[in-house]
Image (cartoon, rainbow, N blue to C red; front, side, top):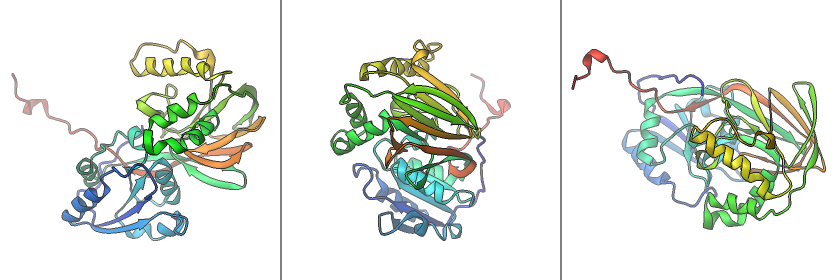
Length: 320
């Protein structure tokens, strides 16, 4: 997942916290994290993300801070990362949403003390971002964007997230009995591919809910998207892909149902679908349908990540 840079040893003093109060279920421990950071001598500047305070306004002076904390769901983290693109400001993903897939992919702890420890390590990694355009609007994404059944699943799960948490996404997809396949035209770095499917996922990170891999070999630091076309007629047709994800997670060999998926890599994608497909990015509905355009922004986000393991001199190790 790209190189980890240890960073400086000094303690950062000025911390900008972008908080989305509508994210998650109110159990993220953010108040405790802020108390711990204050006790460690950080100067805290907390700003609330809402319709009256867009992210570009909240981050306009981000270079004046030693780091930025994005406290919310994946959509909050992604819009903050996109606003900070290319500015070299370290960004800590604080998992305060429902799925928190970006934090999972970065292997971050979930407790306030653990997250503060990661922040104080100053370890960073420069990772790719995605930029998505559809319906006259352009947004950034870190995890994945897509069109089709994944967007429908998100819409179906909205009313259930407060009660079921991440399980709402599973219930959302199971509510769809029949799936509508679309005729798809994918233009991948100028190369045109005609196919069909119920969903097209544009993946930057590789792990989805429950730590399951989307597809093998996805690297958020390689300057490429992995484009996954999912085929099927009913929700039961999605089960083989789930089985293959579990097999991959457990190291049980090559996919057994590879014919259900079509995989491509590219730096830029134009997707057209007939009938059109609804569009999402990092768990947020775009409120638009295909056609869409997505492009990679290589190394555009500087994420605070887990520090590299400390190497022990074998001569210093005690021989048992």
